[in-house]
Length: 468
Image (tube, rainbow, N blue to C red; front, top):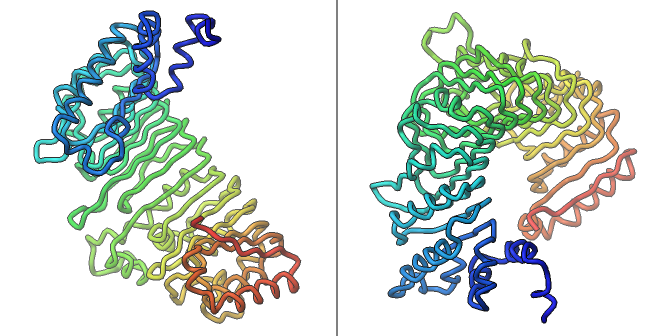
C-alpha cells in the first residue's frame, strides 16, 4: 500500500482541497474509493481560464465551452449533497447563464458559507444573479466581481442574509434599485462592506450600521452627477473607512469614534476648485453655488478626528482649505498620506501638520502641486519670512516621498523639509524605475545632492526604486 492510501480517509479531502478543482476531480478516476473521497472536498474553485488554458484561440474552438460546462456539471454531480464551505466560480461570456444559475443554486443548497463569483457577461440584457442567493441562511462571505455591470436583486425588502459578515461588490458599475440605507438592515451581523463603482440614486446618503468595522464605499461619478446634499455615517464601531464620492454640501452626522484608518477621495470639478481658490463667502452673488457649503467638510473631519492613519486625495486636500479655521486636532494621528497633483493645491497642509501633535510618518505622493498665494509656510514655492513655521512644531520622524521625478523644484522642497522638520531622522525618496531610466544623464547630479543631504543633515536620506 502506498503511503498516501494509508492515511485516514478524513485526511484525503483536506489534501485534495489544496489542488485545483480540475486536478482534484481527476483523482475520482483512480478508484471507487477516490471517487467517494472527492465528494468530501469542502472547497470548489471553478475557473474557466484554468480549464480552457491560456492558449490563444482555444476558447473559440467548437465545443470547448460546452466541455467546460459539462465538466462543472459532473463535478457537482460527483459531490452530490455533501457539505460545501467555499464555492468560487469564475467565467466569461459564452457560458450559459442558466447553467451558472444552477451551479450557484446547488452550492447554496449544500449550505455554502463563502461564495466568490467573478462573472463577466457583457451585453444589453445584463446577467442577474439568482434570487436564491439573496435569501441564503448560511452565507457568511459573499464576493461579486465583474468587468461589466452588476444588478442587485431589486426587491431589497425581501433580501435576508442573517449570517453574512462580509460583502464585496466590485464592477464597472453597480445598480441598486434603491439607496444603500434600506439595504443594510438585510445584513444584521455585517462587519465588512466593500462597494466599488456604485451609482448613487439620490442626493442624500446615509450609512447606518452598528456592526460594520470596515467600509469601502466608492461612488462612480460622471459629468452629469451632482454633489450630494448630505452624507451621514452612523457607524459607531467602524475601524476602517475608504470613501470616494463628490464633495457633499453637508455632513450632518458622523459617528465614528473608534475609527483607526480613513482614506478620503472626495472630488470636485475644475470650476469648483477655481471657486475654492477665490475663498467664497456668504456674500457671494451665486447663492446656489454648492462650493459655498464645502466648508461643511469640517464636520466629517471632526467625526474622524480619532484616526491613527489618514489618506487624502488632491481634491480633498484643496477643498479642506475652506475649513482650516475649524480643522480639529488629530491627537491620535501617527501617519498622514497626502497625494499631490500639478493642478491641485495643498493650502491645508500647514494646518494639518500643526493639528497633528503626535504625527510620526508623513508620506507625500507627488511633491509638485498648484501654487497659490495661500500655499502655506510648509511649502517652499513662495518666499515667506515665516516659511517653515508649521514644520518646526511638527514631530515627524520619517518622511516618505513617492512619485519623485528628479526636478530641481522637488529637490528644493526636500531640502526645505530637511531644514525645518526638527525631529526628522529618515527620508526615503521613491523614483519609478522607468523615470530613473529616462534620467540617466541626471542621475549623477541627483545622487550628488542626496549625498550632500546626508553630509549636511543629521538624517539619513535614501533614494529608492519603485515599480519593480
